[in-house]
Length: 230
Length: 292
Image (cartoon, rainbow over all chains, first blue to last red; front, side, top):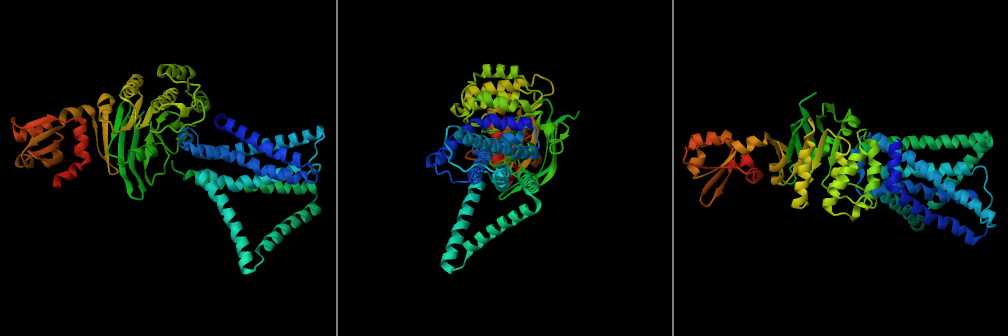
């Protein structure tokens, strides 16, 4: 497993580094310049987590771009190990990237720049949850269908959004409000669960759910990757 | 230890419009086997099936005595594999690509890689995309030869290369085989490459293996009969591999020159068949052409 992680680091590390450096300008510079100081740290951290979850996807897309999947599959490793390395590497890269971003944002406060509200103890759980959901969703399509799959997923989500908006407007049905209500209900349910079992147990349940989701995603990705032909 | 580097039985792979048809193939250990056939005959599919890069529909593949699926890791650690279009990262230097690949192979030798890189004149600090096609193939060959592989599998390794480098690459193959027990399977369109290095020739057409023969047998026993139609019609069907109508008569590819001469007499015009002629006759339909 270490050999696979090392391989990806050597072959894609530099590009990931440059991509991350560019994005850092946006997520550090943007709030610093607006300087309102009213954005919750957790909301900012969630946004950064979504972006950082794309970094490991970039590694997979690079392999797809150079048709190097055939190289990986001709190495003496099992395909399941290749998939496992994608998930492990993905989590390591995304978590490390978010951690550095958060530390950088906190460091700004040393220079008197405080564009966000102070972080809460739930920040790590928010980061893990967002990264976990993003990776679990994107990994199977990226691993099986490469850039076509990821683009297809993103376009499909966009089209779904447009269809929902159009259907709401044309047929006077309250789809958007319905979705909003559903999201609020989930959040409310989470808050109630948190109040009932306490914040520590709630965090543990959330992290366990995210890990479970990633295990299911890994099983699906393995199944799909075993069928992939080069 | 088996006598075959690769043993294929009943291998089947179906695509829309193409089927690899229950292929049986033996690639002898310690020899160079050339896989030839027209475009779309199934050469690349067969090689990819051996490497488990595509899924088979039926059949078994044994590589160096091991099942290529059950013992995939062990099998691949003993294979050096070269694609017609090497699948390396274009924006990464050769040195870094080799550094990323090396740990996967227990038999990898940095000294050997550096020696080959120097011999091939590889600019290790340059990015892959900056190289010519020939240099890319040299790099792929250097990587494949640096981990002491027992079996080299190459898919059209000489396609698109100039004559000088083709010769250089083939000379390396020959040198590699000086180590006893090393085996090579390579597909090619270029018959002169086969004549230069192959010990065995396997001909594939329309997804089926037509023949596997020692090169010497092909060279010594196969011939082209040039005669009128009644004479060619007298040849035993068992030895005629193909025929074509010419302005001055009929040409027939025969698999046994001596038998043909026995039928036609010493005055008949029978030339040794070149590899090019074998390819031309076989590509036109081979045995089926007899009915035409």
